[in-house]
Image (cartoon, rainbow, N blue to C red; front, side, top):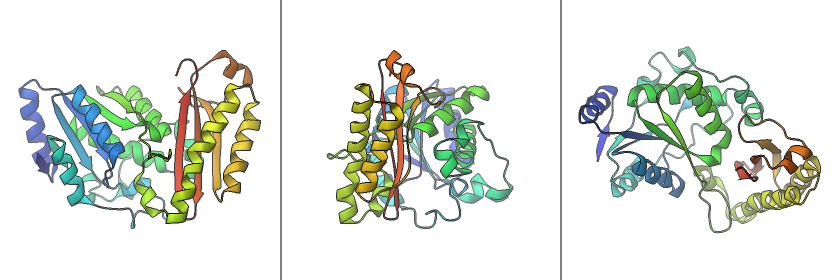
Length: 287
């Protein structure tokens, strides 16, 4: 496994693989890798002869009151995990490579509409930061295919829309959410949970499953959403949102549309103590 610290090394290797006619897959990460990340690497290995993984904690997607400084950075452990999976190349840029003039002076890209609803309402600028860094990484790696997790479902849609709008020759693939045995979606931020909070955290996925069941049984959508919110609040969560949307543009759906069987996604974000958790369930007859 090769580790590239700068763009010149990266591009030299990419050019060699291109000259050999090899297909390249890319998995961008912020490190602190867990089974969810590694499952994306496995998908990438199925899609291409060569796999590149990037590790970069992107400051542009953190607001001043978020956890950029404390975000877990575990590079040595991450590299060991990726080497065990026979990843071909790991790209570990620093801020000076990604934002040579500083992130606030950098050209940015923003996907309209999708970036400003749901998660975007609670984290202004987040999707601008994601889209900008992903576009920059795509330009550096020049992959044929890139793999992202479905746990960050809205982020996945934002990236797909950016690729479509900017005519990028990159196939975007979503990987299924990996979960702990009790249902909690795997996330680097789960490490922030205390023992008691970790025990309570399983309620998030369980509540979403109960909400899905209500919706499938014909309960009014708004009533099911509110019931889910109240259940989470009764277990100590501070809820940002629980919302049912269609899966293409995350538009709200009526009860009639639900009964018609369109593909649906139930999205949630809630804080438990100081830790903000997100999750979703994709369902419907066309999902």
